[in-house]
Image 1 (cartoon, rainbow, N blue to C red):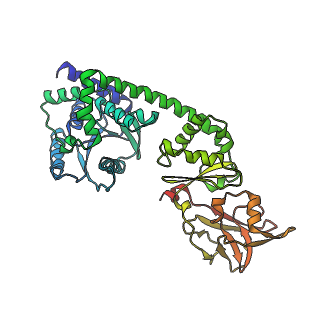
Image 2 (image 1 turned 90 degrees about the vertical axis):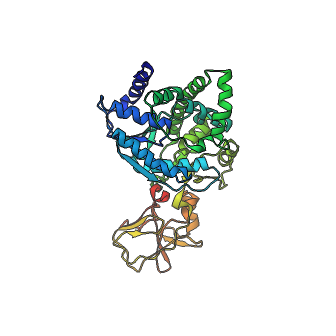
Image 3 (image 1 turned 45 degrees about the horizontal axis):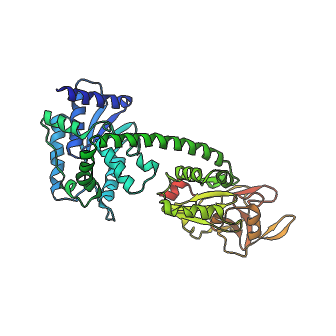
Length: 442
């Protein structure tokens, strides 16, 4: 093995040192040059090093006729190296970007395959990192996007790791030549209609001809930007800790933030904190669509502003902003009679209802607000439900799905609202467990 190849093995092993106690290292094996070198390196390191169990996964997208032969090639390579191979066949959903749709399908297969305490290893290298930086720069990405591909991140039940980000494509080619490796040449990689291929074959050669170290310096810039993003994340966590105070309606189980705490921040810090908070919940808007946040933030007190995002809505109520998604965006179906009040009642798309204590005589039934309801309160007489809800400050988006307990036409109780949720003597109580965020996502 040449000195350069020894260095490559050493680089790889050093990069993987923190993950030596993982249960399994799974290699994302396309059969191309990069993943072939990664697989070969690991299989040979396993002969002299105590490594986790190795396995490989090949995702077959079914987009090219030529690709039908690739699983057999990958199987032959893995058998020669003694590494078990899983072949995952996926359906790529049609869309505006074939590249993105194929990537989404591929990573969905990875998420399904990876288990707890396992690491998925992908073979992106330093040249890929530079290409990613340039591609995202041309799309107007912010600091997070310009950070490039992270070296590691959670993936499904396990973790994704890119151990070759400090390795150049030239190093991989030299290793492959030394070991006489064979690999798949994907014909789509030559199609310059794809933006990344255009950058790779047309733009980057011009840059490196003028600036030979362009790949290295761009990858280094991505590292600097990754550090900057880390600092922004830390700042966001501090700001969100201040805004994440308790609410009288935490029982809703919905994420919310104190608006006054956010308003004290500069505009840039508001966006940074909200981006950090919304990132795991929805696709974030581009710069031109952040006016929705300003409209929500600056609305007058009696307004009912909503900022509609890709995967849910942001509401403003009671001095807070609330993230509402999934089942919360759909009306709850009518319920009707509660045949066995001693047992919990599963509300369609709306959680679970229980009665505790000395349950009132029936027949009982559940309705949702339609308008005009009146409730008889001890010492207060008849009161409009609308006024009672206003007094409670319950967010407006909750009111249409708040369970109401009736006996005939008499409104007996309003779930979860103190003073309205049971008998005057406290002998019984109506409790609603709203739909969880997981239920909403499902």
